[in-house]
Picture 1 (cartoon, one colour):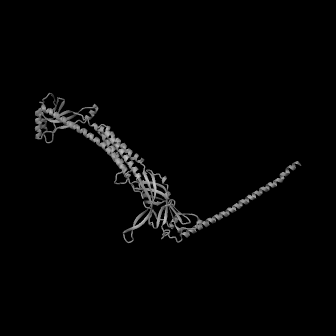
Picture 2 (cartoon, helix red, strand yellow; picture 1 turned 120 degrees about the vertical axis):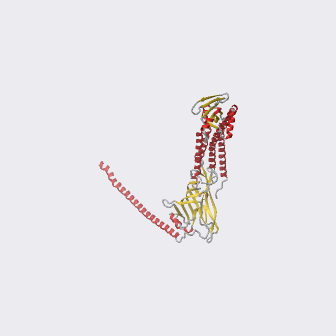
Picture 3 (tube, one colour; picture 1 turned 180 degrees about the vertical axis):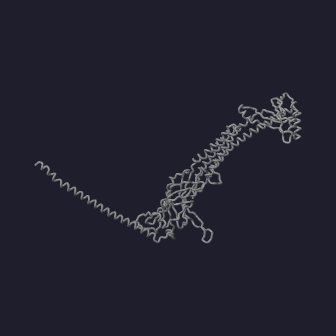
Length: 543
């Protein structure tokens, strides 16, 4: 009995729990079914709405373009229409001094109002395919200073057209243009250039069309993010002005005032970064100029070393000058970098000329002193042998006397450099004397004879002077036998004082050249940096 009583509640509750569960499942299914039906209805309504909306927009566009004449501007025959312009600059690059132009990529958007394109406002703003611009009137805006322009067409032409219900139109495109920029390169590479981008109507005068910047000073964006390799954009300004042109008449070639054409200009200042030119031109020129001064510390007798160093530096400076000219147009005026390169070239070339002057002065002094020594020796010999002097004088008057011949020993310089500071050097003087005087030399010296088949050699030592008799010289038209029996050559070795003042030129050059170069650099950089600041203060915007 106890067991039956305890089981009876369980048996009573089972049917109740199962029924509740079934009820919950039924309600959930009904809710989901209702939601699905509602979604289907809404989706069908949305599709129907979208279809209706598309049909309405297509009908609106068809209605707008029905009877629309793209050849006539809005409000044709009435007041002028205003075109608002705004620009987003993408990049500025390829600034060329040779061609005097630059390349700019940008988004160009034009705003105007065409009452013929009004439609019902419930349709909202319409973003249409760019090809719609081919069936409506658009401004004939062009870039007045462009050389080559194009609209990007990957994957389709990058054009955008937006319409508003009141007839306002926004027409945008992505274009890249190569625009001209006339540059003044007198201060190159410490110059600043003023370049412009100019937009203008090609055919409409101010009476039909006017231009303005759509958002005032904020109509151009992106300039602050532009990075150019050799330039920095310091300032930019938006300008609006009128441009007057003259046009030809229909029947004659004469011109008449064509009216004022509206023009918008984006003017910006480009400051050239000089760092590249310091490493590429200025620093190599300075180092080459200093290198040319090394020759002042090289012995003046080392001709090969000094000449090779001078020619190498001159040719290298010529190469640098050529590379500078290749990157610039062929203009007539002198540029800042030309002055510096030419001055460095002048210093290098002057160092080479300095050695030429030293070498010439050195050998000229030696020849002069050799002639003086010869005259001194001849005077001493004439005092002892007056008859020899009379004989030589008579033969000179007869035209048979041989000129005195001087031979400088080329190894003297090396011996002098090895001996240190020597006050004397040697020269050889050759002249002819009669054979009948060989056996009768007078004076306090003596004669040494060595027989040989050619007449032998006779040496005379007298007062530190050596006389060496060598075989005869047979000149053209002379009898060798007669001259052999009459004359013998006498070679005189003479001690010559060394030229002590040649090195003083190199000494002065070691001080003068660096001082002049430092002064030149101080003046050069001071003047051009001052002019650069003055140019910036007096800069007037191109309008």
